[in-house]
Length: 235
Length: 55
Ligand code: HEM
Image 1 (cartoon, chains in turn orange, cyan):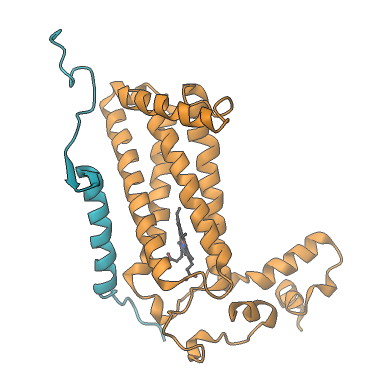
Image 2 (spheres, rainbow over the protein chains, first blue to last red):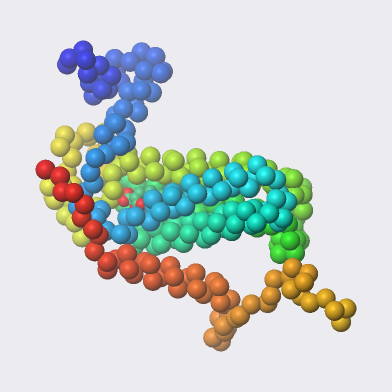
């Protein structure tokens, strides 16, 4: 062990040498997600297929949604009815949402047919599912903000359902101010957090080998197996 | 009746629907689903471009 490789080699030696919770957390994080796994330079050859692009396609669409949404929110909920630019930004906001959901669903189909939850990747699948559900709620609150007859109709159908399950008093679809707040703060933040966790989990585990690939395949074996991490992937 | 058309009131029009027996779908929704299926198939058959080869 050399002093200049400090934190990484210390992590490789195990958590024992850390005595504080911050040190132990760093050791754990470096073991589970070393920098070369977090930001890798290459991927196995089986990843060179368009089907692997849709997850990042959804991320890209989401980034545009956040940008255009910020412009809409900062100009207030009437601007996009009266300004030409406002209408345009509003339209691109909607179309990026359409792309976001289309990419997400194609991504989901791809992962389903690859059985991509294999090898200890269950939490990746679950966070993906959560991203889907939270995105639907976010889109729903977006439709309520159209402030036209469409949104009025949606709100007054939805209020009956929400009252029937007993949450209508706290999640009141007829309260525009409350729905605006859900749509522009809490829900996008929730989607962002879930997606970040999802992508970090993908980095931690590495991309799942195709169903037909043998586990003996040379490129599926990491150079220096770490039992604690790789053992789990063999499940 | 009052000379107000549905479009004047900003009402969405009723749209185009397709029906096969019990299965009913709005045109726009059908387009979105068909587009996704087509993109999915294209993603599997179109070869992925190879960039700079390392090493
Ligand atoms: C907001 C929506 C989502 C985003 C932005 C997203 C993003 C990503 C990204 C960037 C990857 C990396 C590899 C790839 O793209 O193929 C990935 C992998 C994965 N996604 Fe998603 N995803 C989303 C929704 C979902 C959903 C709905 C599911 C399924 C329920 C899902 C399941 C998975 C699984 C299992 C992997 C791991 C694949 C592997 O290890 O090879 N994701 N996701």
